[in-house]
Image (cartoon, rainbow, N blue to C red):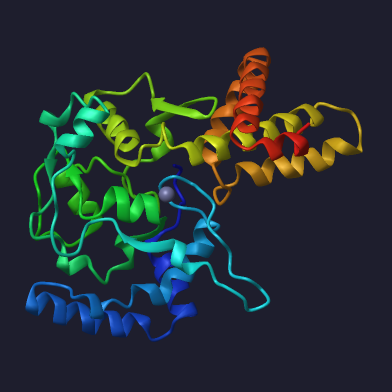
Length: 306
Ligand SMILES: [Zn+2]
């Protein structure tokens, strides 16, 4: 997970440019929702601006950085069903996390430090795009749902994200925007796997562990496989970038692309780039392990990989 930095006014300007009537429709719907104190399924207009977020995010999930299908330029299938507009603070209710099953299966020992957000949800944020991002079905539907663990005190009446974050001290991180925690300050990469950074204070350590446990960032096989393939690619470009030839220019351009904010698995790859700079031998060992893992999961990849 990495931050996709954008100022609130710039995000709203992008939305207004792409969907000029959205803001006024959203205001109307928000007033209705607040009056009836809930959002019903038919009220949702957030999907109308899904494409704004997908472009901003480079067609990857904001939480797990998995790639998502881009629209077919020939007018074929859009792939939109594979991802959702995610409300960071849930609309209608908040359910506790971790469940007993999750706490047991992931050996979570910090559950007593967690509280949960406003029980009746954040209906006043249901139409606020500063509370949105786009995530994959696994992150959104299977894992997040209506859950919103916090370390502070629920503040259902606060309206602004900054004010809410200060009071509630959320465990999860909304990586879209320029407020709150930067996930790269919390997470540390070891090849394709992720851990809390070693130098964190108490709150941030719980936050980092919760982020990993909540989205199962360290155990989901599709994420590990994708990161392994990406590590092999990056490693080889990093090697080519050391050469004194035309290949170096191409390699530098490819490295820049692989590490960009909008790049798939950029968090992991930036961690790998740092390791490569620090200890090229250890990086090479991870590259070999990554290649073996990828080949064991997807044998046809072996034929394509150097
Ligand atoms: Zn995801």
